[in-house]
Each structure stands twice: as C-alpha cells, then as structure tokens.
Image 1 (tube, rainbow, N blue to C red):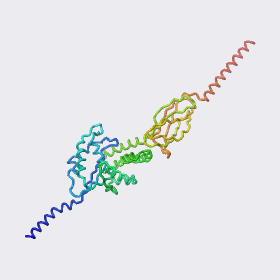
Image 2: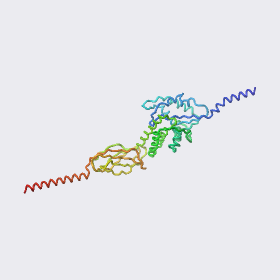
Image 3: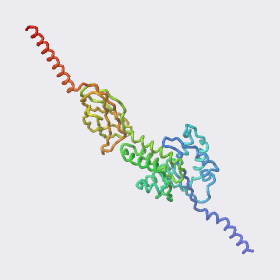
Image 4: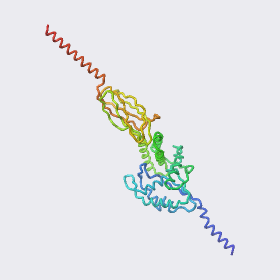
Length: 367
C-alpha cells in the first residue's frame, strides 16, 4: 500500500512539475515596425487591432506564457503606443481611433512585466544585416538608444543587449537605400550644428526603414519621408530668396543668411555672376549664431546695363556645400564710366563739329 501511495505521489508530482520545468525560462519579444512618419502622423491605424486582447501584441500581455519571463521590448513601439493614448492623426488628416485600446495595453504591459526582467531591443529593431552592411559604426548607437529610451518610457531600469538579435536579410528598393545614404551624408555634414537629441532622433529615423517585418509599401512611404526630412535638415542653413535692381556703378547688395540650427556656424559665401555685365568682390568668412538671421553685403561693380544674376553658394568651414544654391536676378540700370566717357566724347565732337560748320557759314557770307 505504501509503495502504491508513493508511486501515485511521484506520478502526481511529475505531472505538476513537468510543465513548470518546461516553462521555467520564457522569452517574450514585443516589436512591431513603425507606423509613424517623422512628423508624428501615423501611416495607418493598424496598431489598434494588434493591441486588442486577441491581437498579436495584445495576446503577449493579456495572456502571456507562464514561467520565468524575460521581455525583449522595442522602445519605439512603446513610444508610438503612448502617442496613441492622446489625440493622434492619420495620413489624410483622419483622426485615430485607438486611444482607449492603447491605454489598456500599456496598463497591462506595466502590470504583467512588474518583477520580470526586461531587455531593450535596438531602437526601432532594425535588421542587423542592413545596419552591419550600411553603417556598422552605428550598431552601438541603436543598442544604447534602445535601452535609454525604453528606460525613460517605462520608468524603470532595463538591460541593454550586447548585440543585435538574429539577423535577417531582405530586399530593399534602391530608392530607399539612396535615401538612407543621402541622409547619412547630410547628417554628417550638419551634426556639428545640432544638439545631441536632434542627432539621435534623425539617426533613429534612418534606422526605422530597416525593420525586417516592415511591409514594402510602408517601407517606400518611410523612404520618401526620410528624403523629405533630409531635405529639411539640409536647408536649415540657407539663403533667403530675393531680387535686386542696381542703379549705381558700385553698390553693396544685401542677402539674408539664415541658421535654424541651435549652434553657431562659420561659413563662407561664393558669388558668381552669370555674365560679364557685373563683377563681384569676394566676401570674408561669416559667423552666424544659432537660430538667427544675418544680413551679408555683397560688393558689386556694374560694367553695363541690362540683365544678370548672382548665383550664391554657402560653404562650411570644412569647404563643404551647405544647403542649396540660390540665384538672385539682377536688373542693371547704370551708365558705366566707359559708356559715360563715350557719350560725353561724342557730345563734345558733335558740339565742335557744329561750331566748325557755323564758322564756315559765317566766312562764306563775308566773302
């Protein structure tokens, strides 16, 4: 009898203990490609269905696997869900509908992960394959930013991964790759004028196009958005448009230089005339403060009246082109010294000629 009871006890213990042993260590990964553009506008409202109780992300927090859980979470996703808790806008100016769903999901995430270990995925969870291929020097940036931002958004300390999760390769359109390369070039050129948090935001935006599960249509949209953001960044040091009318032989033309970066910039300006009707003197290097405008005087000398234009280019102190070239139409309403001399000389000749004719007529009458 004792042997039977012991056998039953051992069997029962095995039934109870086996599932626990199998589920003792469980990894839960919470990631989703971005649904937002750089301006905060959501591409779609697809996150709503994912966050519901029966959605893919909803099941992970409302009915998580049992056991000793380790959560691997992308801070970018949490930030987007948090943005949904307030009024948010979709493409086409439609209002988002997921505020209550987002609040419920975040509340459950906070409750279910309390006491569990949390590790931060690289920010935006970009593909290790593409980041290693395109910007290997930025791998640590995405790992560090993921931990930094997840700590901030969850309000608790999280662990930083030492490397990217398992790599996945996938096809990316050439236009998206070109947008990424251009973005990296412009960021490198302008980073000295930017604050650290601005650099972080832009570099994070660059990586968002390489999430492995991003639908191709959304990747194309985000590629265009990256191109637009890059153009805006490029033009934060720029020249104001304008046109001029010159009425003096020598004159200084005012052009406005704008610096929308927070840090000051040392720049030089190169000015070229489109034809030989006007000569332009060189302009010394200029320092323009952050978030300010500065009027620069361009010395010109007019040779002949007519039409011309001045093409102005901004260069950094490292002799790199900043912003876009600007062409200023110039109307020249000036009589040059040469023209004045020719006109005056012709007038004197005509006057002398008239005097000679009058003198000859008088002599003929006298004879």
